[in-house]
Length: 110
Image (cartoon, rainbow, N blue to C red; front, side, top):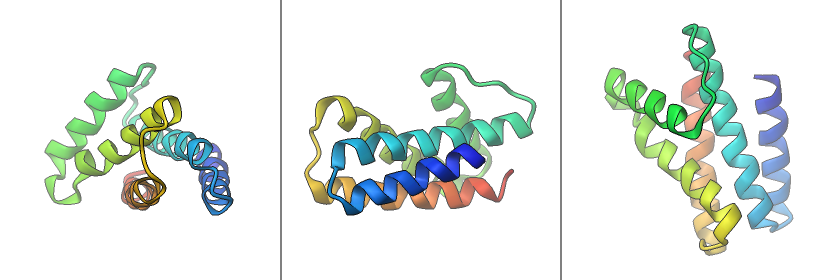
């Protein structure tokens, strides 16, 4: 989760600098790396976006109380924001909080 930590630090810095587009992509990257780390712990290799989504949904089914799917959707929306720049700043901030929560919950599984 070393790369994840760097991405998360970069995301927070960019968010503080109000670079919402770049922060969005860094938050997505941090979430994706955390998800891949959990998958690797289970001896699964994730190579595609769809595989990330499918794995997170399995985690959601396994631990519905942790709301993995709901939190993951915030990360996915930030990824889209990188390309589309469709979110207002407060939307990026709210989704960033959800991604940080997602990563915290995933760390317990690694």
